[in-house]
Length: 550
Image (cartoon, rainbow, N blue to C red; front, side, top):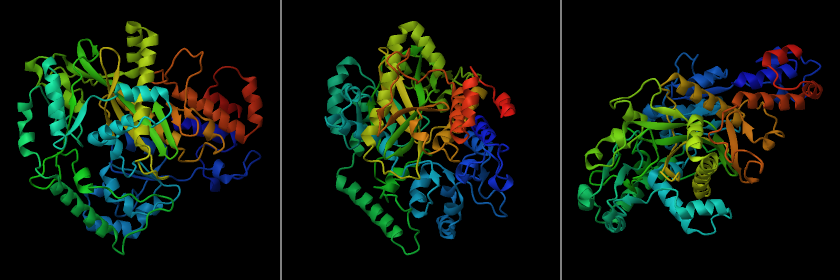
């Protein structure tokens, strides 16, 4: 937890933990840099009341408006447009909050209309959908695959050439191409899966093995794509007119203003199931070839939820969290005609499994990633499993590099992505989707602990309080449970040649030890005499013991 980092650093400076600069007289160890010796009162706003809310409060952050006589609403997207515009004009939120943690719909409704100061951070990039919409992800990966000079990394080129997502088509636009591909593969009894482009929790998903089962797509296919283009064009024009009104606020200096193509069509297709499309326009779906022979655990299907933090796209910086989990089906896997309509067999989403027969509320249908890695290593051999985890990291990196030039870089934005990956029986990883708002609601105590530590380390990496000195930060490759996977300036971060493991993903999460070590380095830089103490001691030093010594 953050106390391990903050307490050690303050102790080395001779300050009581958590004091503000105006409360502490400058002592013999006080640095001349007031920025490093103090922490600001961090204010936040969020629309969530789950684990993220608990983490923000536990770090001593202050909820903006919590003490106001008329506290603001918790979710801007639920306000009337007039109320939202009034808040923007008052300038309260955009000038007094350090952290905005909202759902992705907030980006299109508010982000472009507020002025953000240098220190303020928002938990989404403006056009995150280049990566997180299923259809956009497929298109961007296909383009990257077709561009032989996309990057010079042979490993990523191999991942893209071999395919890292199942065969994917967007309907209704690509129906003729898909139909031809379907007919060629139908002899083998292939199954396909249909998914709405912008929903979650298994909503709207179904499987099929005959074109007749989706005949409505062929019948309802828009006869003229110019009709859709006209609709989107009208929406874009209205969006631009709205932004051109005199009362709008300017965007932050140094940020790129992004037009959202077809914002209403893209973003209104929310998880609620409301597509937001005009009458007569077919909702877009992606159709993917079903992974018919997945790797099973105890005869049951599973996929993996991995967490990836991107503080910036320019330069592209990627941190991967060591912990994650396998999401298990509660029903035995079967590829029979009878099971095709049974979502409990084929969909591992928690929202689906928790209402299925046999749901186990004790473990919540989740299996720790580190325990899974140990189990698979015992079954298939450690070398093979290490290569599999290394390939998963390459899949993550390939997807991010495929959209690197498309996602608008903004110094105020960061994003915690939830990657869903499935393994086939040959241990090949397949990317299913990338979530812009992975669930931060826990369904078991262990799930709460994992997500709490994950989110706490998100803010450690972002260095919101400025505890980590700027000249120390670039050399760090681990902060808490996050490991640096890639940085544009240094490339892919790799394990040493003599390391026993090839990937840190799924390794034991030694986040507390990592935070202690980081605190030692910070304190040694702030108080040079601390180095002598560090050299005199061997092994781990207890936090309380160290504070007493200091």
